[in-house]
Length: 274
Image 1 (spheres, rainbow, N blue to C red):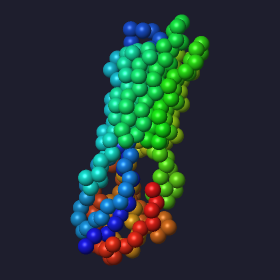
Image 2: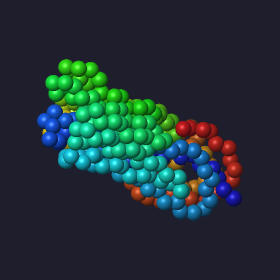
Image 3: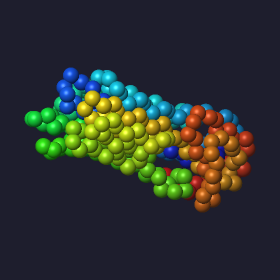
Image 4: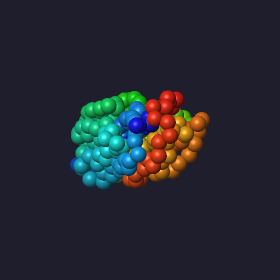
C-alpha cells in the first residue's frame, strides 16, 4: 500500500568568485544556482529524511567560490551549484548549474541538469567584467561591451507552483565588473558587484554575486525541499505545513524528517502542481 506525493528539490547555490588577483582589475564570476529535481513518488508509513544543501561561501581569495551542497528526499538528489571563478583567468566550477568565468576571458562552468555559466571578458585598457552564473532555467550571460563593459547577468531560475503560489528558485549570480556589474538571475541570484558581490536570497538555491576588483564574492543560498499531496490521502508531519487547492504542502528549509503516520487512500490521483 502506498500513496503518491509530488516533490520539488532545490540544491544549494554556489558562492560568487572574487576579484582578488595579481591583476588589479580582476573580477569574479557569479555563482551557479542550485540544480532542481521535481517529480512524483509513492510513500508508505515510514520516516523519510530530508536534507537541505547549504549555499557555498563566496570567495575572498584567488580560489573560486565554494560549490553549494546537494539537497535530497527519499533517494532523489538535486545537484549543487558550482562556484564562480576567481583569479582573473579561472573557469567557473561545474555543478547543477555552472559558475561564471572570471574577467580574463575565463570560461563559464558546465551545468547539468541546469545551465552553463557565462564567460568573462578581457578588455584592453582594463575595463574587465566576469560572466554570470548559470541558472536552473537559463544560461548565465557572457560579459559584454567595451569601455565600459558589463558583467554577465545570472541565468534565470525555474518557476514552480507546488507551494500553491508561483515561485522561482535557483537563479545564477551576476558577474562582477570594473564599472557595470551583472544582475542576479530571477530565483534569488545575488547581484554582481563593482565592490563586494551580493549574497543570494535565503533558501532560494540562488548563486552568489561575483566581486569587483579586489573584492569578495557573495554567498550562495541554501536550497529547499517541498512535498505536496492530496490532503485526505495521508497523515504526515515535518517542515512547515500549509494547504492549497485541496493539497497539503510540507516546506523544508533545514534538515528534518517527513514522517508519514497513516495512509487513507492508496493510489489516489494527483493534481500536478510543479
